[in-house]
Figure (cartoon, rainbow, N blue to C red):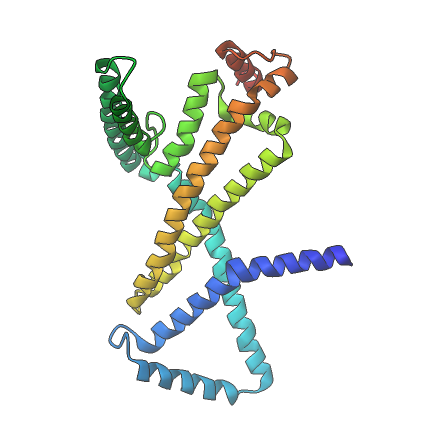
Length: 296
């Protein structure tokens, strides 16, 4: 059937791109580490000898045993990929500042430090706005903009999470609540239903980029574990860790901006659909929030 064939191709592409290739690199790293160990981390002659010995031993086995070994390798690669995908969920929670109960103490300390830095930057913005008269000269306006950029680099609103990425998403929620009286968590599922398809596609694509960056960074964990037997694996682990983290920051910033922008542009559509009127006030937002929460 064409549908099943297309589905099979999509699954194969997904497995090859997201699981098989990193998994095979992980397997190669593990085998290299087992062959060289900590005492001979870069002994190429030792590695060539080990590969030749394994190839000869593998070639001498019956075809059934070779097939069994190949299947076991593919199974191990797939298992590693599934484990990484599962761990990526925890990694994303850490990135977004939703830390487990055992880490609430460190999370509170980090969030408090971020809040102090943000308040310092906010005071600088307020001082410039109060001391520089209006209309302002271009240099004066630029000074205020630069101070605001320093504040925005910390968080778009008063920090409440221990991480930059967490405050990017939480900041969108806080700004929407302040501007429109809307509790984004309560209203979002209903707003999603009235968003145009192209807007939903953009938000979904941004969310997938966040997830892809998280999975890329999570691949650093098994490589780092191999460093226990072959320390150069730690250097390999830094590549997906740093690349995933940088991509994650950019993807989370875009995702949060799209969430806030969707409310800016389409909250009135939701208000009209819910018979709260098209002209927006904070009372409209509060009424919608109360309605969506249903007394909870």
